[in-house]
Length: 171
Image (cartoon, rainbow, N blue to C red; front, side, top):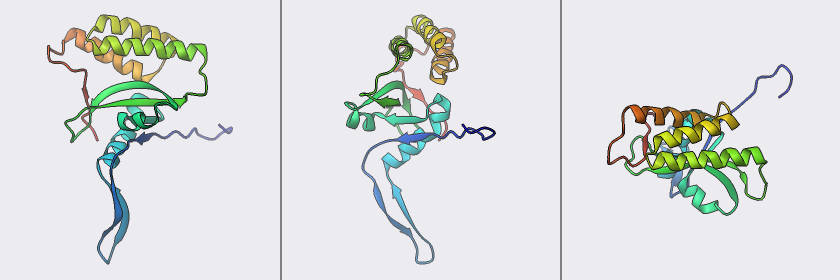
């Protein structure tokens, strides 16, 4: 960051799938655009980067195409507005060929264990593990979200049919 200049941050949502592209409109006003489920999901993922505190969020569809080359952390299993099928989402960490430091690897391991406990509805264990992850990386929004949800589920259990899917209510 240059001295006196504000820090610029932006989020990127990436998803893969079939799309239709071309000129759409009338003779008076023509625009080149792309439409399709992949575009819609990418837009939804871009908007939730702030919620999870991540710069780049990938859908499981994109992750599957390049998983041998990239390091990610699984963020959540979500259902976006307007869709019934849930989708796993991931934060892009970097290229798999680039090693991470020991503290980052410990954080990622603890977070992954917390996610596993969360998905198994073992919310007390999830809270313990997410607290350990939070000690390694204070302020991590994905950890804070999972801690908050786990605490809520202890007070109001989600029910027998809970599938671990978080329903996104905003576009």
